[in-house]
Image 1 (tube, rainbow, N blue to C red):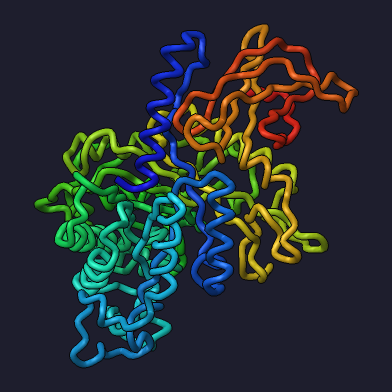
Image 2: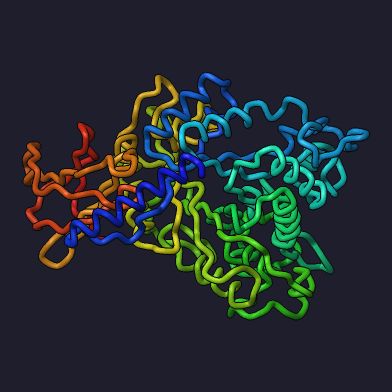
Length: 507
């Protein structure tokens, strides 16, 4: 049993014991939801010292699991050559030389701290693994060879027997990660990335199984899908597996709903995809994909809109998660995947606007903190969601090309409001004549949370007083409590840490 498994087991024991001793303990909707953090820049690309600091910080923030994209081209030999190196066997870990050094230390360092690891083998790919023609740049995500990808996954599965969480390919419904999204066939633009992805997933699942990573012992997840899609004028990519010929090069993002209908060979009504579309998606003789979870990135547009903001048809953000579970349940009914597949949010966040930068895809620091907490509340109330995510810890250095979704600024490393909001989430909603306070003591180990103080400051005052102290008995530090509706602002206090100041929300 790993340290994380022991930690979870202890937490569950505390839940059982506390519930027996405290019959009035608050009800729990998601007592064992995992908290995931991803930040490859500081965990894989900045050297051993920064990697160790990042893992320490992730642990202190309350993460349970660390995710890392394992980009094939970064580990393969001769990645810009169009010919595979002579004598190279991609399924043997030793064939990759020392390229896995930082990944080795990430896995070992995370596990030494009691953190689980989720690895996502993905493109860009070595040029020699593409079935497309042209330059290395043109091949980097174009039609990866499923067998060669399976060899790469087999090497990873062999090298990391203690890694028990795997997901397959990052954002396969985006052209920047897998192409083509659409391809001209018989004068029509036909969705291609879905069937490509299905082939890659089958090969990866087979390779993981061959190296001892089976669904009976490990978590193996499909998806890692992006939430939004293109809908260029006249293309209707949000809804169709076929589009006008002129759309083939214009669609860079396939909506997740359309993409998954292709992956699972489903009609719009949830039946089996037949006719010409079924042939184009290679649906004949469909064999069930042996996975036990689905990973998704439930961002709002640009990471810049509230969690419950309006979406286009076919898109799946955190506010419309039922669209995803409906598709998964339709696929389960058709025996494409196991029924009632759990959902894992493995990449999520809000883009902030650094001082002096005019970025329309950004929110204020205060909004970032608020939206992180609101998303925690939304996920807490969805019993299909088993993992929530924060991307990243530190903003990227490049404002133009990077992501400012961190809990800390890159320049100077100053903490944003979201830093403590992530550690100690709070969300307050009106319930009749009372209020429901949701919170989480994210950093606490099993039994260490004890109680958390729910505090209120009357309207116009900055002086907070404790209204009630709540026992935290859940496996992951989450709780709810009812308090009088006295107006003003609310916050949590635990072991010297205070949450952000929260207003009463309507949802």
